[in-house]
Image 1 (cartoon, rainbow, N blue to C red):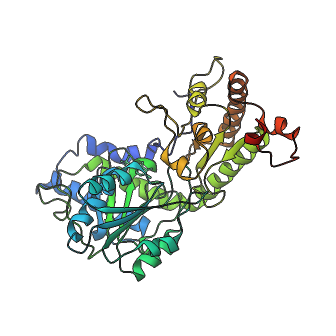
Image 2: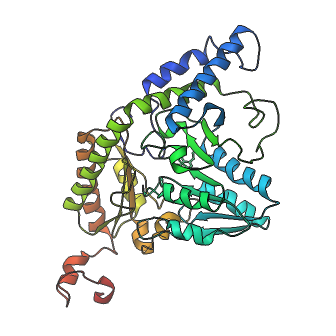
Length: 413
Ligand SMILES: *Cc1c(COP(=O)(O)O)cnc(C)c1O
């Protein structure tokens, strides 16, 4: 594992060593519960409040508006179900989009089964939502608009500021799922003008199983969990002290590194995109070319399955090749080879959606990793295509037909 090249950082990141260091005492000698009054407890309480302040500083919030949770899945569920419960007397309509994460779509489906009306706005070929369409979809009974900031699969960054201006004008609460963007690009709840915002520590070099929901002062939301008085009576349960301290440290580090790291990763991202386009034919970039997360590369590769590519890269045949970990939008989930709903929402053909590969970068990745990955990928693609019954060197075959460029394989075959 030490020698593997990890390029699946949209799934999770390695915990930063400084974060680990900050967490360690809270897993050993400082084991007190923050709910207790003796010194061991009040120390923990103080550490939690420091972490809350650090996180608030990263997202432009007041510390009193930050609530710790178990991660973005919980925060998203809380934002949607909690708002739905609190505002049900006003109406039973929620607006989202087709290319959302399952932790948004599934709570929406849950509400749909209870009779709620959910509008799933379409995205364009780059994965963007039209802010005007958001305005057009808002009705008198709309109680929430929920929009992802950075898409975890294709990297497209939504025009959240413009969407926020629309929802503010129409006086509808806005929830932003910022799990992929916090710590990677500027996220400011004031600029976005959002009421709720979800984030997750393990997506930006913090530990797994901890996150937060930003709740603007005055926003109406029912708790998801009921129990003790923690988190101002809104999120009960003994605090995950080491996790929260780790999240606070990750936020502090991110704040210091953001601008530089954003620039470096954007350069590395574009270098990979350029190299792939130079070294491989019949591939298509998924997601917006420039309005995209600095660490996201996603290509559809004609004629082969994304899963075959992913497995070939992670189990290299030669002993002196490092394993490379990437992901695919067409993983064989529960036995059915269904391409992801996000790729399909872009309107690309099912065959192309099957051949998708996502490379997602972290602070640990270098230019050398990028070179190794592109080289290995080109070799794997070449080998798999040579065995593929469906892949024909499309452009070359078509070029012998009537069209000189912009070939149409469907017409040719
Ligand atoms: C990772 C992720 C989630 C889920 O976060 P967890 O903390 O792992 O529950 C939700 N939405 C997006 C966009 C993500 O990338």
